[in-house]
Image (cartoon, rainbow, N blue to C red; front, top):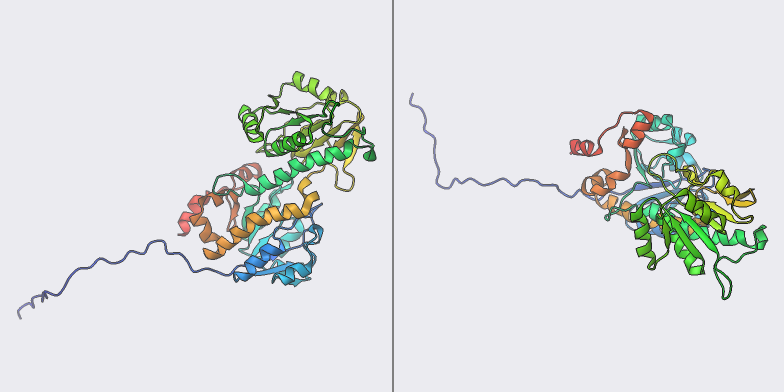
Length: 404
Protein backbone atom coordinates (compact mmCIF):
# COMPACT_ATOMS: atom_id res chain seq x y z
CA UNK A 1 0.00 0.00 0.00
CA UNK A 2 1.61 3.24 -1.11
CA UNK A 3 1.91 6.01 1.45
CA UNK A 4 -0.49 8.88 0.89
CA UNK A 5 1.29 12.09 0.10
CA UNK A 6 0.30 15.23 1.90
CA UNK A 7 -1.89 17.55 -0.08
CA UNK A 8 -0.48 21.04 -0.34
CA UNK A 9 -2.96 23.69 -1.24
CA UNK A 10 -1.83 27.03 -2.62
CA UNK A 11 -4.49 28.87 -0.73
CA UNK A 12 -3.04 27.73 2.59
CA UNK A 13 -1.27 30.54 4.47
CA UNK A 14 0.14 31.08 7.93
CA UNK A 15 -1.28 33.82 10.11
CA UNK A 16 -0.07 35.14 13.42
CA UNK A 17 -2.34 34.55 16.35
CA UNK A 18 -3.35 37.59 18.32
CA UNK A 19 -1.61 37.79 21.64
CA UNK A 20 -3.82 38.80 24.55
CA UNK A 21 -2.20 41.56 26.54
CA UNK A 22 -3.39 42.89 29.90
CA UNK A 23 -7.08 43.34 29.17
CA UNK A 24 -8.91 45.90 31.26
CA UNK A 25 -11.36 43.98 33.42
CA UNK A 26 -15.03 44.81 33.46
CA UNK A 27 -15.97 47.38 36.05
CA UNK A 28 -17.29 45.88 39.24
CA UNK A 29 -19.88 47.13 41.65
CA UNK A 30 -18.44 47.82 45.07
CA UNK A 31 -20.40 47.12 48.25
CA UNK A 32 -19.05 49.51 50.89
CA UNK A 33 -19.76 49.46 54.63
CA UNK A 34 -19.33 52.46 56.95
CA UNK A 35 -19.55 51.46 60.65
CA UNK A 36 -20.04 53.90 63.53
CA UNK A 37 -16.74 54.39 65.34
CA UNK A 38 -16.71 53.56 69.04
CA UNK A 39 -13.00 54.24 69.49
CA UNK A 40 -11.71 56.83 71.99
CA UNK A 41 -12.55 60.36 70.76
CA UNK A 42 -13.00 59.43 67.13
CA UNK A 43 -15.38 61.99 65.64
CA UNK A 44 -14.46 61.69 61.98
CA UNK A 45 -16.15 59.62 59.31
CA UNK A 46 -14.27 58.42 56.24
CA UNK A 47 -16.89 59.27 53.59
CA UNK A 48 -19.11 62.37 53.55
CA UNK A 49 -22.68 62.28 52.16
CA UNK A 50 -21.46 64.12 49.03
CA UNK A 51 -18.89 61.38 48.34
CA UNK A 52 -21.45 58.66 49.03
CA UNK A 53 -23.73 60.37 46.48
CA UNK A 54 -21.02 60.18 43.82
CA UNK A 55 -20.33 56.49 44.56
CA UNK A 56 -24.02 55.55 44.53
CA UNK A 57 -24.71 57.39 41.27
CA UNK A 58 -21.86 55.38 39.75
CA UNK A 59 -23.58 52.13 40.58
CA UNK A 60 -21.89 51.26 43.89
CA UNK A 61 -23.77 50.32 47.05
CA UNK A 62 -23.10 51.97 50.40
CA UNK A 63 -24.41 50.67 53.73
CA UNK A 64 -23.94 52.81 56.83
CA UNK A 65 -24.59 52.27 60.51
CA UNK A 66 -27.20 54.49 62.17
CA UNK A 67 -25.70 57.79 63.47
CA UNK A 68 -22.21 56.98 62.12
CA UNK A 69 -21.69 60.57 60.97
CA UNK A 70 -23.21 62.28 64.02
CA UNK A 71 -19.97 63.44 65.63
CA UNK A 72 -19.01 65.20 62.38
CA UNK A 73 -22.55 66.66 62.14
CA UNK A 74 -23.57 64.53 59.20
CA UNK A 75 -27.06 63.14 59.80
CA UNK A 76 -28.59 59.83 58.71
CA UNK A 77 -30.99 61.85 56.53
CA UNK A 78 -28.02 63.32 54.59
CA UNK A 79 -26.72 59.83 53.89
CA UNK A 80 -30.07 58.29 52.97
CA UNK A 81 -30.75 61.20 50.58
CA UNK A 82 -27.35 60.50 49.01
CA UNK A 83 -28.52 56.94 48.36
CA UNK A 84 -26.92 55.01 51.23
CA UNK A 85 -28.78 52.26 53.06
CA UNK A 86 -28.96 52.85 56.81
CA UNK A 87 -28.93 49.89 59.20
CA UNK A 88 -29.12 49.69 63.00
CA UNK A 89 -27.05 46.55 63.41
CA UNK A 90 -23.25 46.82 63.40
CA UNK A 91 -22.87 43.19 62.28
CA UNK A 92 -24.90 43.99 59.16
CA UNK A 93 -22.43 46.72 58.13
CA UNK A 94 -19.49 44.40 58.72
CA UNK A 95 -20.92 41.98 56.15
CA UNK A 96 -19.89 44.40 53.39
CA UNK A 97 -16.87 43.04 51.46
CA UNK A 98 -15.26 46.50 51.63
CA UNK A 99 -15.13 48.32 54.99
CA UNK A 100 -14.13 51.96 55.29
CA UNK A 101 -13.28 53.08 58.84
CA UNK A 102 -11.92 56.32 60.28
CA UNK A 103 -10.45 54.57 63.36
CA UNK A 104 -8.26 51.45 63.57
CA UNK A 105 -9.72 47.95 63.80
CA UNK A 106 -10.21 47.09 67.49
CA UNK A 107 -10.65 43.84 69.44
CA UNK A 108 -14.47 44.11 69.43
CA UNK A 109 -14.50 44.22 65.62
CA UNK A 110 -12.66 40.90 65.19
CA UNK A 111 -15.62 38.48 65.53
CA UNK A 112 -17.59 40.60 63.01
CA UNK A 113 -14.92 40.55 60.29
CA UNK A 114 -15.64 38.41 57.22
CA UNK A 115 -13.26 36.13 55.34
CA UNK A 116 -11.41 37.85 52.47
CA UNK A 117 -12.69 41.30 53.47
CA UNK A 118 -10.90 44.49 52.40
CA UNK A 119 -10.53 47.14 55.13
CA UNK A 120 -9.44 50.73 54.62
CA UNK A 121 -8.61 52.34 57.98
CA UNK A 122 -5.79 54.02 59.90
CA UNK A 123 -3.42 51.79 61.90
CA UNK A 124 -2.12 53.29 65.12
CA UNK A 125 1.27 51.67 65.43
CA UNK A 126 1.58 52.48 69.13
CA UNK A 127 -1.69 50.73 70.01
CA UNK A 128 -1.43 47.78 67.63
CA UNK A 129 -1.18 44.26 69.08
CA UNK A 130 0.17 41.09 67.50
CA UNK A 131 -2.99 39.07 68.30
CA UNK A 132 -5.10 41.56 66.35
CA UNK A 133 -2.89 41.16 63.28
CA UNK A 134 -2.84 37.37 63.59
CA UNK A 135 -6.65 37.20 63.73
CA UNK A 136 -6.88 39.40 60.63
CA UNK A 137 -4.32 37.18 58.88
CA UNK A 138 -6.41 34.09 59.70
CA UNK A 139 -9.42 35.71 58.04
CA UNK A 140 -7.33 36.40 54.90
CA UNK A 141 -8.01 40.12 55.12
CA UNK A 142 -6.58 42.79 52.83
CA UNK A 143 -5.74 45.86 54.94
CA UNK A 144 -5.02 49.31 53.53
CA UNK A 145 -3.77 51.94 55.97
CA UNK A 146 -4.51 55.67 55.68
CA UNK A 147 -1.12 56.78 56.92
CA UNK A 148 0.89 54.91 54.31
CA UNK A 149 -1.33 55.62 51.32
CA UNK A 150 0.69 57.39 48.64
CA UNK A 151 -0.62 59.40 45.72
CA UNK A 152 0.95 59.85 42.27
CA UNK A 153 3.48 62.38 43.55
CA UNK A 154 4.78 59.99 46.21
CA UNK A 155 3.42 62.05 49.13
CA UNK A 156 0.93 60.85 51.75
CA UNK A 157 -2.31 62.77 51.04
CA UNK A 158 -4.34 61.86 54.16
CA UNK A 159 -1.44 62.39 56.57
CA UNK A 160 -0.76 65.68 54.84
CA UNK A 161 -4.35 66.92 55.25
CA UNK A 162 -4.50 65.83 58.90
CA UNK A 163 -1.15 67.54 59.57
CA UNK A 164 -2.37 70.72 57.90
CA UNK A 165 -5.47 70.70 60.12
CA UNK A 166 -3.41 69.98 63.27
CA UNK A 167 -0.86 72.69 62.42
CA UNK A 168 -3.49 75.36 61.80
CA UNK A 169 -5.49 74.28 64.87
CA UNK A 170 -2.46 74.51 67.15
CA UNK A 171 -2.33 78.30 66.97
CA UNK A 172 -6.08 78.65 67.52
CA UNK A 173 -5.72 76.50 70.64
CA UNK A 174 -2.68 78.43 71.86
CA UNK A 175 -4.54 81.72 71.39
CA UNK A 176 -7.44 80.32 73.40
CA UNK A 177 -5.29 79.22 76.36
CA UNK A 178 -3.27 82.44 76.47
CA UNK A 179 -6.51 84.40 76.90
CA UNK A 180 -7.84 85.28 80.36
CA UNK A 181 -10.98 83.14 80.00
CA UNK A 182 -8.94 79.93 80.34
CA UNK A 183 -6.76 81.12 83.27
CA UNK A 184 -4.11 82.08 80.74
CA UNK A 185 -1.81 85.06 81.03
CA UNK A 186 -4.27 87.29 79.24
CA UNK A 187 -1.93 87.74 76.31
CA UNK A 188 -3.16 88.27 72.77
CA UNK A 189 -1.39 85.87 70.44
CA UNK A 190 0.22 87.82 67.63
CA UNK A 191 1.19 91.45 67.59
CA UNK A 192 -0.40 94.90 67.62
CA UNK A 193 1.23 98.27 67.11
CA UNK A 194 3.62 99.31 69.85
CA UNK A 195 3.69 95.96 71.65
CA UNK A 196 6.40 93.36 71.09
CA UNK A 197 4.99 90.33 69.24
CA UNK A 198 4.21 87.08 71.05
CA UNK A 199 7.05 84.60 70.82
CA UNK A 200 6.28 81.17 69.38
CA UNK A 201 8.73 78.25 69.32
CA UNK A 202 8.02 75.33 66.99
CA UNK A 203 9.90 72.03 67.26
CA UNK A 204 9.77 70.16 63.97
CA UNK A 205 9.69 71.58 60.46
CA UNK A 206 7.33 69.03 58.91
CA UNK A 207 3.86 69.85 57.64
CA UNK A 208 2.45 70.43 61.15
CA UNK A 209 5.34 72.78 61.89
CA UNK A 210 4.89 74.61 58.60
CA UNK A 211 1.16 75.21 59.05
CA UNK A 212 1.63 76.23 62.69
CA UNK A 213 4.30 78.71 61.54
CA UNK A 214 2.01 80.09 58.80
CA UNK A 215 -0.85 80.64 61.27
CA UNK A 216 1.42 82.25 63.88
CA UNK A 217 3.05 84.54 61.32
CA UNK A 218 -0.34 85.54 59.92
CA UNK A 219 -1.34 86.66 63.43
CA UNK A 220 1.86 88.68 63.71
CA UNK A 221 3.78 86.51 66.19
CA UNK A 222 7.53 86.07 66.11
CA UNK A 223 8.30 82.47 65.09
CA UNK A 224 11.38 80.33 65.70
CA UNK A 225 11.58 76.83 64.23
CA UNK A 226 13.87 74.03 65.40
CA UNK A 227 14.54 70.80 63.51
CA UNK A 228 17.53 68.50 63.06
CA UNK A 229 17.00 68.27 59.30
CA UNK A 230 18.45 71.28 57.49
CA UNK A 231 16.59 70.16 54.36
CA UNK A 232 13.24 70.39 56.17
CA UNK A 233 14.11 73.82 57.60
CA UNK A 234 15.03 75.02 54.11
CA UNK A 235 11.82 73.60 52.66
CA UNK A 236 9.73 75.28 55.36
CA UNK A 237 11.40 78.60 54.64
CA UNK A 238 10.78 78.28 50.91
CA UNK A 239 7.13 77.31 51.44
CA UNK A 240 6.43 80.10 53.91
CA UNK A 241 8.08 82.52 51.53
CA UNK A 242 10.29 84.67 53.74
CA UNK A 243 13.17 84.33 56.17
CA UNK A 244 12.30 83.11 59.62
CA UNK A 245 14.54 82.09 62.50
CA UNK A 246 15.53 78.44 62.05
CA UNK A 247 17.98 76.34 64.02
CA UNK A 248 19.03 72.75 64.51
CA UNK A 249 18.04 71.30 67.90
CA UNK A 250 20.88 72.39 70.15
CA UNK A 251 19.89 72.06 73.83
CA UNK A 252 21.54 75.28 75.06
CA UNK A 253 20.03 77.47 72.33
CA UNK A 254 16.65 75.76 72.69
CA UNK A 255 16.63 76.16 76.46
CA UNK A 256 17.40 79.87 76.17
CA UNK A 257 14.60 80.42 73.64
CA UNK A 258 12.07 78.46 75.71
CA UNK A 259 12.73 80.66 78.77
CA UNK A 260 11.29 83.70 77.01
CA UNK A 261 8.56 82.25 74.77
CA UNK A 262 4.79 82.33 75.26
CA UNK A 263 3.94 79.29 73.13
CA UNK A 264 5.95 76.11 72.48
CA UNK A 265 4.68 73.58 69.93
CA UNK A 266 6.00 70.02 69.73
CA UNK A 267 5.59 68.76 66.17
CA UNK A 268 8.48 66.35 65.74
CA UNK A 269 7.61 63.21 63.85
CA UNK A 270 9.18 59.80 63.92
CA UNK A 271 8.86 57.19 61.19
CA UNK A 272 9.32 54.28 63.57
CA UNK A 273 8.67 54.05 67.27
CA UNK A 274 8.34 57.00 69.63
CA UNK A 275 9.29 60.64 69.12
CA UNK A 276 12.56 61.81 70.66
CA UNK A 277 12.21 63.83 73.87
CA UNK A 278 14.07 67.06 73.19
CA UNK A 279 12.69 69.29 75.96
CA UNK A 280 13.65 68.12 79.44
CA UNK A 281 11.69 68.70 82.63
CA UNK A 282 14.33 71.21 83.71
CA UNK A 283 13.82 73.28 80.54
CA UNK A 284 10.05 73.34 81.19
CA UNK A 285 10.57 74.40 84.81
CA UNK A 286 12.48 77.46 83.56
CA UNK A 287 9.66 78.55 81.25
CA UNK A 288 7.45 81.52 82.08
CA UNK A 289 4.38 80.94 84.23
CA UNK A 290 1.24 80.97 82.09
CA UNK A 291 2.99 80.03 78.86
CA UNK A 292 1.44 77.27 76.75
CA UNK A 293 2.91 73.97 75.53
CA UNK A 294 1.04 72.11 72.81
CA UNK A 295 2.49 68.67 72.14
CA UNK A 296 1.11 67.47 68.80
CA UNK A 297 3.43 64.46 68.76
CA UNK A 298 1.85 63.05 71.94
CA UNK A 299 0.32 60.16 69.99
CA UNK A 300 3.87 58.95 69.42
CA UNK A 301 5.03 59.62 72.97
CA UNK A 302 5.51 63.39 72.87
CA UNK A 303 8.69 65.48 72.67
CA UNK A 304 8.36 67.29 76.03
CA UNK A 305 9.40 65.26 79.07
CA UNK A 306 6.46 66.69 81.07
CA UNK A 307 3.77 65.70 78.51
CA UNK A 308 0.98 63.31 79.49
CA UNK A 309 -1.97 62.35 77.31
CA UNK A 310 -5.12 64.43 77.88
CA UNK A 311 -8.59 64.21 76.30
CA UNK A 312 -10.89 66.60 74.41
CA UNK A 313 -13.02 66.78 77.61
CA UNK A 314 -10.09 67.71 79.88
CA UNK A 315 -7.52 68.99 77.44
CA UNK A 316 -5.02 70.72 79.73
CA UNK A 317 -3.02 70.35 82.93
CA UNK A 318 -0.57 72.64 84.68
CA UNK A 319 3.03 71.74 85.51
CA UNK A 320 5.58 74.30 86.77
CA UNK A 321 2.87 76.89 86.07
CA UNK A 322 2.98 76.03 82.34
CA UNK A 323 -0.28 75.06 80.58
CA UNK A 324 0.16 71.70 78.79
CA UNK A 325 -2.25 70.77 76.00
CA UNK A 326 -1.59 67.12 75.01
CA UNK A 327 -4.65 65.83 73.17
CA UNK A 328 -3.85 63.14 70.63
CA UNK A 329 -5.85 63.19 67.39
CA UNK A 330 -6.31 66.99 67.24
CA UNK A 331 -8.05 66.76 63.81
CA UNK A 332 -10.93 64.93 65.53
CA UNK A 333 -11.72 68.19 67.27
CA UNK A 334 -12.40 69.64 63.81
CA UNK A 335 -14.23 66.53 62.67
CA UNK A 336 -16.16 67.93 59.74
CA UNK A 337 -13.15 69.45 58.00
CA UNK A 338 -11.14 66.30 58.72
CA UNK A 339 -13.89 64.05 57.34
CA UNK A 340 -14.03 66.08 54.13
CA UNK A 341 -10.26 65.84 53.76
CA UNK A 342 -10.24 62.02 54.18
CA UNK A 343 -13.25 61.64 51.91
CA UNK A 344 -11.57 63.68 49.15
CA UNK A 345 -8.78 61.10 49.01
CA UNK A 346 -10.82 57.93 49.46
CA UNK A 347 -13.76 58.64 47.14
CA UNK A 348 -11.66 58.91 43.93
CA UNK A 349 -9.70 55.84 45.07
CA UNK A 350 -12.88 53.78 45.52
CA UNK A 351 -14.20 54.99 42.15
CA UNK A 352 -10.99 53.86 40.50
CA UNK A 353 -11.14 50.48 42.26
CA UNK A 354 -14.65 50.02 40.89
CA UNK A 355 -13.54 50.88 37.36
CA UNK A 356 -10.65 48.43 37.56
CA UNK A 357 -12.85 45.64 38.88
CA UNK A 358 -11.81 45.68 42.53
CA UNK A 359 -8.75 46.57 44.61
CA UNK A 360 -6.71 43.53 43.56
CA UNK A 361 -6.74 44.76 39.96
CA UNK A 362 -6.17 48.39 40.93
CA UNK A 363 -3.03 47.47 42.86
CA UNK A 364 -1.66 45.77 39.75
CA UNK A 365 -1.88 49.01 37.74
CA UNK A 366 -1.18 51.56 40.48
CA UNK A 367 2.17 50.76 41.98
CA UNK A 368 2.26 53.67 44.47
CA UNK A 369 -0.82 52.26 46.21
CA UNK A 370 1.19 49.26 47.36
CA UNK A 371 2.88 51.21 50.15
CA UNK A 372 -0.53 51.54 51.85
CA UNK A 373 -1.20 47.79 51.98
CA UNK A 374 -0.09 46.10 55.20
CA UNK A 375 -2.10 42.89 54.74
CA UNK A 376 -2.81 41.27 51.37
CA UNK A 377 -5.27 38.36 51.50
CA UNK A 378 -3.96 37.45 54.93
CA UNK A 379 -0.24 37.83 54.17
CA UNK A 380 1.64 40.48 56.17
CA UNK A 381 3.28 42.85 53.69
CA UNK A 382 4.52 45.61 56.00
CA UNK A 383 8.17 45.19 56.92
CA UNK A 384 8.05 47.34 60.11
CA UNK A 385 5.14 45.31 61.51
CA UNK A 386 6.74 41.96 60.70
CA UNK A 387 9.94 43.01 62.50
CA UNK A 388 8.11 44.40 65.48
CA UNK A 389 5.84 41.42 66.10
CA UNK A 390 8.17 38.79 64.68
CA UNK A 391 5.59 37.66 62.12
CA UNK A 392 6.29 36.27 58.65
CA UNK A 393 6.87 39.00 56.06
CA UNK A 394 5.81 38.53 52.43
CA UNK A 395 6.89 40.81 49.59
CA UNK A 396 3.73 42.35 48.15
CA UNK A 397 5.16 42.77 44.64
CA UNK A 398 5.90 39.05 44.45
CA UNK A 399 2.44 38.20 45.78
CA UNK A 400 0.70 40.34 43.19
CA UNK A 401 2.88 39.07 40.35
CA UNK A 402 2.29 35.44 41.34
CA UNK A 403 -1.47 35.94 41.19
CA UNK A 404 -1.43 37.10 37.59
